[in-house]
Image (cartoon, rainbow, N blue to C red; front, side, top):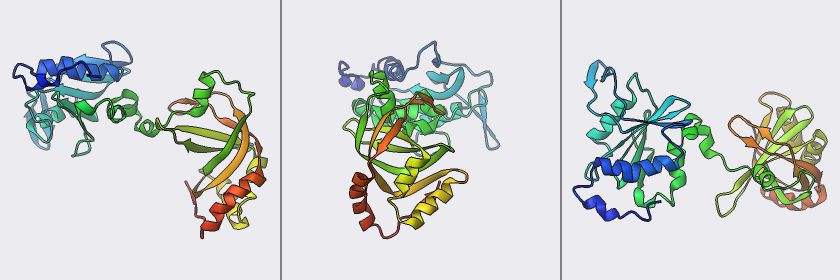
Length: 307
């Protein structure tokens, strides 16, 4: 990201806040998707009508105007200020000032950050320690950490930061037809959810070198019976009992290993994103048992929990 930037400039007394703002901070925000106009917006140097904030019983004057307020659909979500490379941006007066701006009634954001060219430090209103303290020279290899605390949709929907890319969606976008048979040598079930009376689903993760994918597998009540037939009867009955009442979800502390054939399902819209589930076509119970029996033999107590 800054391969062409000479970091020795940070030692130059003439490289001050405005240089940090334009050469370091703005490129970061641009890569995060913030623009002067658009859904993820930037407001520069916003003036406050009443530049005071109450902290306890004291009225504190705000003496700075942060360089950027970040917005999402017009709502303020974060404030970010650039400082010179010589200024401390951890537990300092500068941090207190940006915090005061962030909690001001005209702003009210949950996230505030400072960058001095050497570091970018991000804070949460409700936490004392920084939630990100990153050397700028490491920003490329740790970019995912920056996204998790400053990307607009992650600030608005913090649950999304733990999401992994959906494998079904990737395969559909790559042109895979829905009638192409897909063979899973092992599909590990750690949870079972009842979607409706005729549909159950399980979510699993597939680890890869670039972080991995998530995938959902849909199956029928008859296929659920096949899966549960591999368990000791008392555990199978417990799972069915839990799935019969709210929240209709069971978490397992062990994987049920399946060998199966599936196909791509239809595009679905979740709470935060779109995804494409796989639909189980045929579960090879005998092959699954050969794998799963090793798990059963090492488990003294199969703990099953209601979510």
